[in-house]
Image (tube, rainbow, N blue to C red; front, side, top):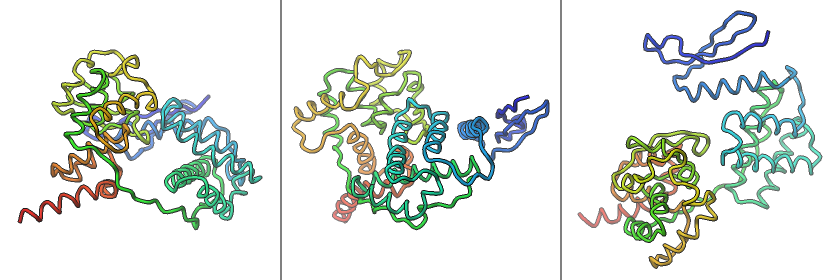
Length: 340
């Protein structure tokens, strides 16, 4: 009889919200605490366990070929985040660089990819890609290696342990002022574009998050971001200004902003934004992400607590906020001392 796995909260009636893994085999049940009260985390653990059970493995195996490692890890990512998500597509593109490098370097198995190979891999990437991209690729390769080592009980250590990735240059982000944002939105070619830009300028959504937002996830004064960057989800408040823009679209049955009104791809939708910025006679770089940066910058200029801004921007660390928007804070400090 096959072993089945599921999750449940065993003591919810007592106010204990911890999730448990339920294993059923041969008519016998076994429960194991997952040490989390979040259903999303419990579901991810469950999917990982099911995936591990579905893939045949040999305990204590010393070697596994790189192609199989990448294939099995991507299959796991498909289960966890879905292969139609932008995150999955980014993962697949980055991990492919490692697989292709290993093939060109005649590295067949995980044992072949030692510390020296890791060093050469990073050096090769650094000659072709930006420091940020190199860091992202190495991070994904580490995740792939760690997952395979744990899942297949491979006897390995971290080959990147003594390898340094190139330092990221922390550049200041560009943004528009609140007045410029309002001028840009006023020049939107249609109400749909205005509402779409408003999701980024007044709620800090990324292009993909605004583009994939469903009407049912923007009701009740909240925006529910499902499977955002890194597969994370969040609930964000809707301001009165944004509510007015999206109100006409809340009764839809699928996407909040229909594909017929705004293209799904950023490179196809960006032309309208460039035209609006040009007509408004605003100089500088034009991008959808700049609307998100403008959202954060305006909050900081309005003296909103940086910790609150971090939560609204959904940065994993407040250091990210300070790294990107330090120039905004510095300019406010300069204005502040002049008031003394």
